[in-house]
Amino acid sequence: MADRTFYVTTPIYYVNDAPHIGHGYTTTMGDVLTRWHRQRGESVFYLTGVDEHGQKVLRKAEANGVDPQEWVDGLVEREWKPMLATIDVANDDFIRTTESRHEVGTQAFWERLRDRDAVYKGEFSGYYSVSSEEFVGDDDVVDGEGDDEGFKISSLDGSRVEHMTESNYFFRLSDYQQQLLDFYEANPDFIAPASARNEVISFVSRGLTDLSISRSTFDWGIRVPWDDDHIFYVWIEALLNYVTAVGYGSADSGDSERFERMWPADVHIVGKDIVRFHAIIWPAMLMAAGLPVPHRVFAHGWILVGGQKMSKSKANGIHPNQIVETFGSDAYRYYFSRALTFGNDGSISWEDIGARYHAELANGLGNLASRVAAMVGKYFDGVLPAAGPSTPAEDAIIELVATATADADAAIDAIAPQDAVAAVWRIVDALNGYVTEQQPWQVAKDESQRERLGTILATTAEGLRALAVLLHPVMPKATVVLWESLGAVDAIGPLADQRIADAPRWGQLPAGTPITKSPALFPRIDLDVAEPGA
Ligand code: MSP
Image 1 (spheres, protein in one colour):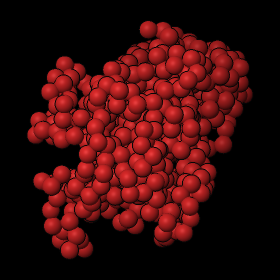
Image 2 (cartoon, rainbow, N blue to C red):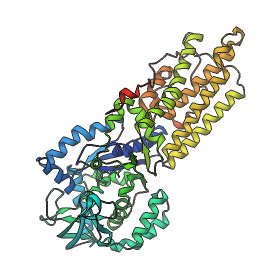
Image 3 (cartoon, rainbow, N blue to C red):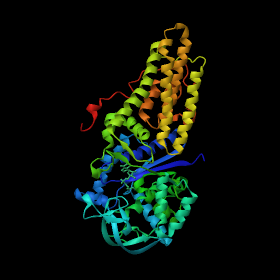
Image 4 (tube, protein in one colour):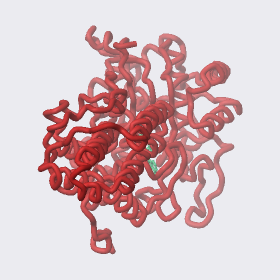
């Protein structure tokens, strides 16, 4: 499947506010995953973007006294696009749902479903949650308590709901119950992890009702082409971004070829709050249209701050800038990849970021790199020595790099970035242990052991070379600095061209390569000074 493109998406985020690290988390993990696939030499397409329509965005714009288009334009340029640079994301496209490619594709899609008799007109009377932009069935509505006293609450996510009666178009979602259940059974990997899969199956097993696909009481949305009084309900147009971004519905034949080539997506990465939309409504829409269903939907858990789900409304929303300004984008990416288990909820704290930064990045990796460069400088005038005969200690390192690489590669296929980073970190730990045991500074005192000293330093440098390749998807900037300090650009070629599978191949850095001492990869940080608000 050489010409297949590995196509990964994030949710498109509501532009009602600035991003926080919950959004940053999904986007970073997708980026680590896709950068790893690129580093394997695969063709990759990584899509992210923003969801600009709907009542939530409209109300926020109105509350600020601005026209909704002006509101989203401002936030997208000031906040959402810059976030990608802040956390060093290499996305291939950025879709906005106010773009005409999305509008055209959305209208074409729903015309097609209407032609196939999957759409009818009716009246909706029931509950709606503006905060999650979701219709909520009567059985899922409860009386609020505490702060929510006097309000009706959605038991699906705790958000407040409003009662509404509206003329709507409906999609015959209920027709797809059995087809969906059969599909989940035939494709056990479609929804991961198992907790998300079980939730979806039990939800669908309880029965599906037809879904409103249009709204008629406000006009911030995409116009329903056959009825000027309606706009599309935000979710059923937002989901279509995954196909409109790759050419669906365009009149251009180049675009339709591109769509054929790219679709279906390999993985939709989503937070667990929105797995039901992606694993129920979305495949049913595609089935109704006669289009292939994506291969996988991966639902990750919540980032908890102070034990609570982080969100802007709780005022515990942390902007990615707050962490990146202190620790840098590499450490940010490393922390979220390593410290949380993708698929589970996980708590983060400033102290924990600081502790891992110092123990693992500054002392673990940074120190190793600077010690090796310093010793090659001191004992070999900054020129990499030749390795002499290997002893079991070197054989063990070479063997470990091979198994750690294979384990990390398998973890990426399992969408377990934390296991991939942990596997690679076995190399960091092993190399530090190797240097401590081999004591090159002692060996250097004995002139007759020059060759042995060369072997130790060449082995450690080779280990660092492999680490630069394997950690490039996680820490794109620091690994380039490391690569340059190893003299690898001239000796081997650009870091981005190195392949994961080739990382364990020993002896790539030739003797005679100039090794230079770089600035500290991860300088120590005075955390008492750095913590925001401290
Ligand atoms: N616009 C919809 C998605 C449409 S996709 C076709 C939406 N947007 S959102 O802005 O609310 O973003 C939700 C996503 O943000 C979650 O699915 C998750 O990826 C991320 N997160 C938001 N808060 C989060 C945490 N506290 N923790 C982890 N991820 C979080 O829903």
